[in-house]
Image 1 (cartoon, helix red, strand yellow):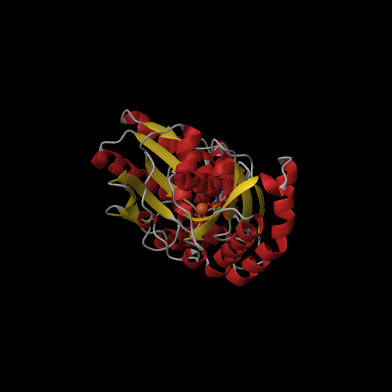
Image 2 (cartoon, helix red, strand yellow):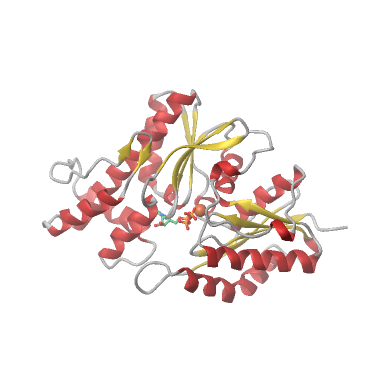
Length: 338
Ligand code: ATP
Ligand code: FE2
């Protein structure tokens, strides 16, 4: 008899993470390590080397913390895309190796769809509009005709990358998003009732799409003109989040759906969560956000989607197991009930 647990391996970008779900699809906390470059942005090959070096220890740690042994694992799932090629290839190689050694099925899954499914499971949503806000991705997604369709997305950089890049310009190391959140809320606490006068930034909405690089440059210009860092962090969050909330609201209106679900690392942000709740309440909808450990990249969500797809009869052969850097959310058929 093979084991009851599905292992999930996440390696799309900065984070290598191993996670598990049990035979009912219930996840346990993942075992993760994130590469933090000393300076500059992420270098894909450096991140891939980090993943290679960290893998054995993280996997052992995961088994230990769940008191499991190799034979408890009944399937191996991994992120097949989208992401950085060298990082994805490390995850896929580990997955192939484990699947072959443990003699259990292999299943390559879509990273973006995994964010959606862990959110639906954790929040008990039925058929939400997903606002997926991470480092590399910013998308508004809805389920329609057997696929998760992208209704709107960033035309340039992801919102998280924008926040990280702006922070890096101020000497704040990766990940900059949480630091910007802290600086913004500290500044607001000291300046209650502050207005955006003099702190205006360009509008990031382009129809149903978004563009963030102009917002980032304009925020930098505010600093160059003498504005306080905390004030600019606050304004940057207000403008960038309002743009995301606006296209999410339009997606709710167009589709007639009444649940909003947040996913991706930037969904850890309290101000974004608050803005989504306010907007949803105003239109008689509900807003949901999973626990933070399941918003950021994690192996548990990969294990969950692997578990769901295996239950619907899909496995990945070695011939089909190559990674796809540009895998789109709507390329994955949704064969399970939504
Ligand atoms: P993906 O492959 O889906 O693009 P990712 O590699 O960007 O994922 P995530 O863990 O989903 O990884 O997201 C990381 C991003 O989330 C970083 O840009 C980080 O700054 C941002 N982030 C994390 N916490 C917060 C926060 N509290 N406020 C704003 N941004 C945050
Ligand atoms: Fe992600």
